[in-house]
Image 1 (tube, rainbow over the protein chains, first blue to last red):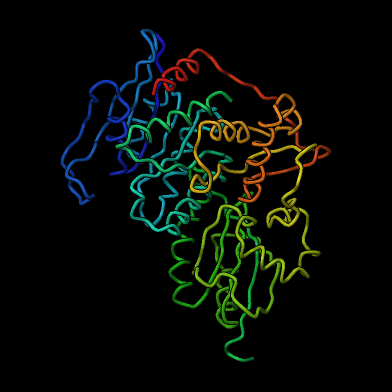
Image 2: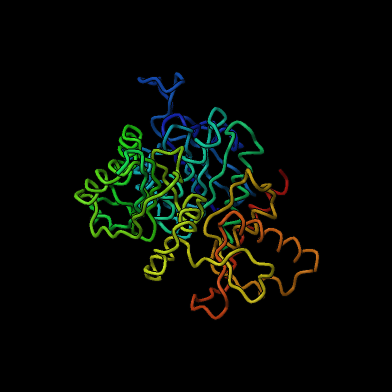
Length: 176
Length: 241
């Protein structure tokens, strides 16, 4: 059995649960609880979201949605073993959490370990063009500090085509 | 000196040794956020970049405001080795709308190109590495890429180009290392080569394509393609979607 992992790492409310659910071929296993702070939705993930894509009888890609906050880095350890790809999911906010992105990239080291990596921007439909540009530049500044050339792509976590496009991009990168 | 006179200071500095686990200076987000607020309150506009492990900043505003801010900057313990690249009176602001804009690459930003064009007298005093930071030696868009080495500095903004499978494949190839244009296009049909040239021109216009001539010393990385079983199975899965 060949089994690899796609880590979908993101901050609170970025849409990890939805993205895993959109991509998964099995009913995703979620560990959600009622949120104690206002993040615009009632429930949030405290552990991992798990889903799976079966490629053939012997091969599968596990989908692991894990929180991006540093206090959950023990979960990063778990998903970093047999990792095939890394999606860092950002929801639109006024600014990117650059320090946390720096920390995530230092942990997963996608450049050094040749792990295909995509930065996905969600919930940006309400942002203006200049706000999105500022957000992208903040992200690119951190990528550049890591000498990582990775795509920054808008994603609609609910749309199958948009989610599949992330997989397509990761697959294209994985051959190099 | 009249109150309304404007000036600009362009400088570089080194971050203090990072104590965190990351590669970015821990102080950068704080510098960026606080400076945005302070600049807005003091009528300063600015452009900040962290690249090649150096800060580069252009600040502009009324003479007394810029002088006061630059005194503070020089005394700030969050960076060291402050070197002024240009200090000049200006007749107009180049960054009118921005209290402080963070950019990942100075050369990509039109305001810095305009500032350099209008104040080119300082360029001759810069070292080669300083000129490279500002993109002064960056080759301009060309008609032919024959005999060049190519590399994507960053992936394109997919608002400006359609995110088709072939564009994604091409970007993945060019982002993964320095590529020889001649090797890349040798076996292409005229039609495919024409499409490739159009894409390269567009990337060049976006300021994301690094173009070097073949006599440069950048080593060429042989294209190592790893289309293993897992890759093939992913491709088959995606083809059905």
